[in-house]
Each structure stands twice: as C-alpha cells, then as structure tokens.
Amino acid sequence: QVQLVESGGGLVQAGGSLRLSCAASGRTFSTYAMGWFRQAPGKEREFAAGISWSGGRTDYADSVKGRFTISRDNAKNTVYLQMNSLKSDDAAVYYCACKRGGNADAVLTTTRDYPYWGQGTQVTVSS
Image (tube, rainbow, N blue to C red; front, side, top):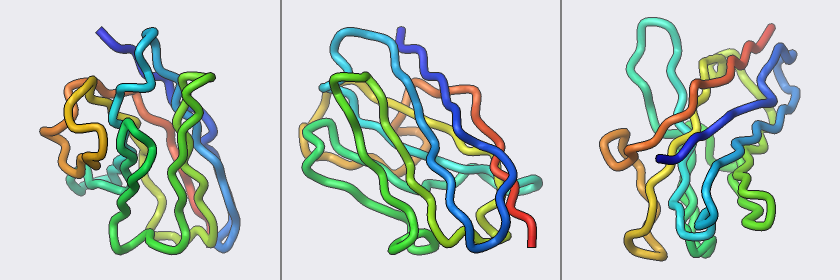
C-alpha cells in the first residue's frame, strides 16, 4: 500500500500562485509514476499533470500548459505542482495519484492508470 498526503491548497486571488505538495509513503518512491488530477463540483475528475518515475518526462493538460509545473524530489518522497497565473476555472479539489513501477518514462494521464490516491486538497480562486 502507498499512502499519499496532499498539502498546500487554499484561497488565492486570480493571477496568483500556489504550490501543492504530495508526500508519499514507501521506500521505492523513485519508481512511482506520479500525477495530479482535479475535480470541480459537478464535474468529472480530470488530469492536470503527470511525471514519469524516471523524472525525465512530464505531461500537462492543455488547460494548464505554460502555467503549471510538476516536479519531484525523490530524496523527500514528494511531488509538487507549482501553479501560476491561476484562473477561476482552476478552482477544484486537487488529488495526487501514484502507480508503482512500470515503464520508467511513461507519463500516465487517466484515472484508471493510478491505483493509489490521496484525499485531496482544495484550491479556491477568487476573482
């Protein structure tokens, strides 16, 4: 089992920035593919960003490209999501997800790719 704990959510004005963190349990974090998803009220959970376990590849939803950056620190068992130029449409609960092993350079982009999920952290954007 892998436990994921997100933090860093909160209230921010439109145009502002937040950095989300996700701390993972386990001694093999360096072999976890990681992803960030988000879910707004009344909408399905959607992919925001992903990073391969090699760290060499990332992918983003078109809606966040150029504004969000995913990164990982294997020494801290943590993945980050830096969110800049936030818009009202970015308001959602943000979830961290992980899959152990697999292709080192694969970036996973669908919910069914990930067996482990955190509880989520709320991001609210005021206009």
